[in-house]
Amino acid sequence: GESVGLHLPTLSVQEGDNSIINCAYSNSASDYFIWYKQESGKGPQFIIDIRSNMDKRQGQRVTVLLNKTVKHLSLQIAATQPGDSAVYFCAENYGGSQGNLIFGKGTKLSVKP
Amino acid sequence: DTGVSQDPRHKITKRGQNVTFRCDPISEHNRLYWYRQTLGQGPEFLTYFQNEAQLEKSRLLSDRFSAERPKGSFSTLEIQRTEQGDSAMYLCASRPPQGTSPLHFGNGTRLTVT
Image 1 (cartoon, rainbow over the protein chains, first blue to last red):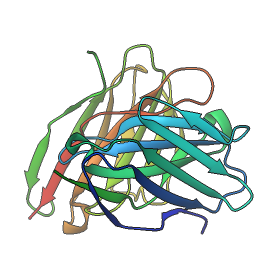
Image 2: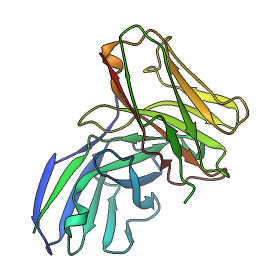
Image 3: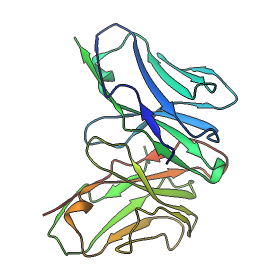
Image 4: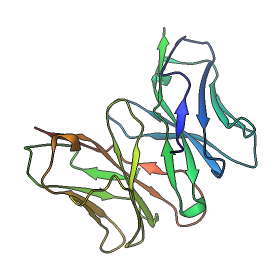
């Protein structure tokens, strides 16, 4: 079936470097995408979202890029900090406003001091 | 901060027992979702309520699982005759009434079936 997946299961970066986490999605009808951060023992925490009519959106230290042509989503974290260490999930919204989110498997980000 | 609240945080039960989890969504959110997450995996959709109506159920939700939201506020998820394969984190999330927006998740209930 169609699913959201990630290219890399783990990513290790040096503190202060930029991080890029990638995600491939396969459902062309998905209209909304979200990145979540999940720390151990906690629920997913919203980071940033983007609608399908956009290709870039920036937040505080984070940028999401959407390439609908190749069905690719990425999360860029600037000046990565130890507190950014977590598992990151991309999720796609399928079914419009009454739909639910479909999650990928996640990428574990480790930040080395 | 009145986020999504789940109770209990942890539950250990013996195989064959019934368990019930509770979720209190953000008060103005009429849409409520249950997800299941196993170790190393992303959350998997189980079911969705709009107010008190259960509008969608995943095929993951076997006959042993039942969810309710009787007054359109809190929700319960019951698992009957638990199996070891039910061990997982059960996450609840809620969403505002209109439009497409992020789901706000609680911190989950960790179920261990021995």
